[in-house]
Image 1 (tube, protein in one colour):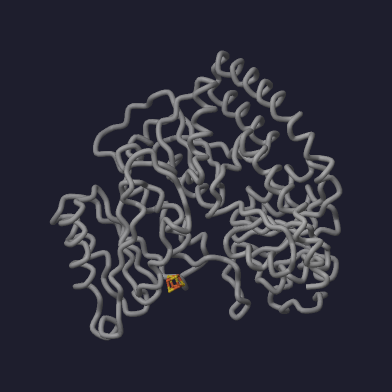
Image 2 (cartoon, helix red, strand yellow):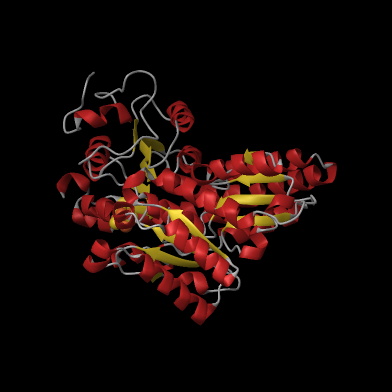
Length: 451
Ligand code: SF4
């Protein structure tokens, strides 16, 4: 196998580039990070917390050292239309003594304290790395607390070392299945569940407003702006819409097996994907009126937004984009958006993409584009420099890297304060990348080659 300079030999199969082409069967993905490669990927616990944290009236106790609890609402701003409890983080703050003698008593005491002060409907208990090492019986503590308080106290076994971020998604999906288990037979209602939107900057509200416009009822939403009671309605829905495929396809399959709810994958990023998704949802309902309304709505919105986007094309056309995001499905939507602007995607990667995602990505980009799974900062830097990227679209961990290289940046992940989904989001996205790439700062500092 041929390996490009500066790439760890163990990483070569996870990268498609001209000097480093994998083994011909598609790039290696959905596997554990290479030891010592300093992966950009988040840990198992982080994956679980991403999915569960937006449930606005759930409480989260992190059973582990205080450092794990730094992952809070503040670094993922999913919005709420009511409850605010989820914005707090609780920790058992395990210390050396607890590591030696065990942390079960401390966990039981933390649950008692949260019940006394807040009396929540559900508590998630995240068992992080050190708990996986010392072997606390978290299941037993949760079971006893559930019996004592007659609420769900759900263990989320998410030691950071026990797999990939996707393992954390799976743990969260198991916790959700436990949470929504109905006590009596389910009677179906007309309507859909939205899976995999976390209401960052209010994007869940945008999706719900579109569905309302075309006459589709939303039963439940996972997990942006969700409440425990709303989630428990989910088994009644007739269709699941999966927006973040990486985190929620597993839950969608479980809901199909258990409650006979089929699912379709959708994407509300970019005009084309938003319109396509709304039409596919409308056809899936089989309702002629919904289909007619969806046709009219998507046409009307496209007519409104496309001329506005056209104005950005003269500034964006010919620029080179690089992408490094959490899931493959988002990367695909971003490539399509860049294509629509006349931009070329020269590097694209994700933390949790699947073989299917990477195959589709390979078909959407040019032959010489670099595709990489579970990248590290050295690889991102190397390929951005080599390809002369004008912008990096990524998350909180990629921002400093781009700025240090003198490359424009667009946050498409945790911290953004304005929506990038739907027709409004497509306009925000064009405006943001235009402002970022064409800022005078890049000519002042001289660009990536001179930094
Ligand atoms: S679970 Fe482990 S890897 Fe994740 S934040 Fe805690 S200590 Fe770090």
